[in-house]
Image (cartoon, rainbow over all chains, first blue to last red; front, side, top):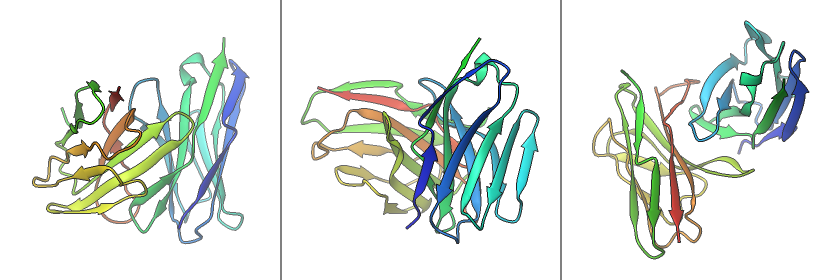
Length: 111
Length: 113
């Protein structure tokens, strides 16, 4: 089955700097890769996603890149702000609808 | 106001008691999911259902049970057979098919002592 590895587990950046979180997956048949942001005590919320027929997608300060050959995808946050501080999860889809999640990255943006 | 609701937000139980966590959605989604979240473990799938009256075990189904009698509802029972039930439980729903976003509820934190 699918396996998703996420790095780093914690990331601390200064406000205004960029943050990059990387995930690798094992199943070459996976074709949908969402990224979720989870604030303390709340459920995860989708922030951006990418499908396997696209190499990059951008939404304001957030971008995701996908390398199907290497089976890895990355989340890029530019001009970080303190409100970006949260836990971020990547996921890859298995068997058409069941997500396999990475273990999460705790991002801290220091003012 | 569409979305997923989970109740209660905090739940406390004594060891040996069964407890049922509620999950309701008004998004008209066919698929619903239960995840367990522990510190440093990410989200692990307990059970999922793609259609009413049908559900499948996820990776960590032992000690849990579910029902799907209505499209809108997918309650999870944590039984006394679950050896380490204290955790944060998340319910999600999605459309069925290839590559649809899962929408998550606010979660229920269960503490068993």
